[in-house]
Amino acid sequence: MNLTVKNSTKKYTQILKPDFEDLYIAVRQQEKRLYTDEQLLNLPEIDSLHTYCNEWRIRKRSAERLIAYLERKRRDLKILEIGCGNGWLSARMANISDTKVTGIDINQVEINQANRVFKKDNLQFMYDTFNDNTFENESFDVIVFAASLQYFPSVINVLKQAQAILSKRGEIHIIDTPLYDPLEVGEADQRSRNYFTHMGFPEMSDYYYHHSISEFWGFKYRIMFNPDNIFNRFFKKDPFHWIVLRK
Image 1 (cartoon, rainbow, N blue to C red):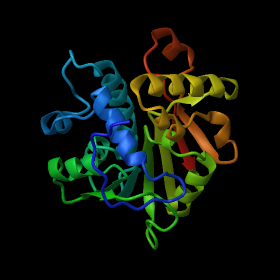
Image 2: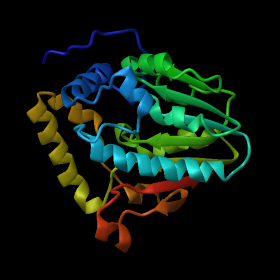
Image 3: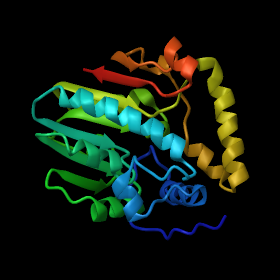
């Protein structure tokens, strides 16, 4: 396998194997999911002829729902986005009044780009893993997993880690994340393995996990948006749940 991204110094936990970052960037390059600075600055708006235009329309709607919800709180919010990628959503959340936003990701290429493109006093990006020691002596009012939960092998473990740094009235928001019926997980896993193998990166399937909504049953959670409701299924608009968890 020929990776086009050079190795760099990085910290890992048992959650991520040492070559995940390079694999992830190589896959994103091949999928044409790395964006120019100009494109990134405008996300989720993108040219109507772009390969992923429809996906960005979906993500725009989910971001708008989340941001409108957070704006209605009308209080200071300290926000953490785990797995922020290129930082576009963190940057949008930083436009909410009285917020302080931190985005964290193990992907140095896009973290560097986020720090270069988005310059706001209430916004910072960190290149690091998320584990029990990452935010010692800190707490957050809002923690967001947007299209990132599928890179953690255990929903239970990562959500418990997130709950440990929630403020008293804090919330965890999960958006833009595929969730499967328990009986569909095996089939979904095989589809991903076929996809990554066809791309030439079969190892990537070892880092992409398929989670079921049943994995949230031990938590206090609320479904804010259900893609399976009759209206959404009829119009085939948005495929992802929006789930909010509290302590």
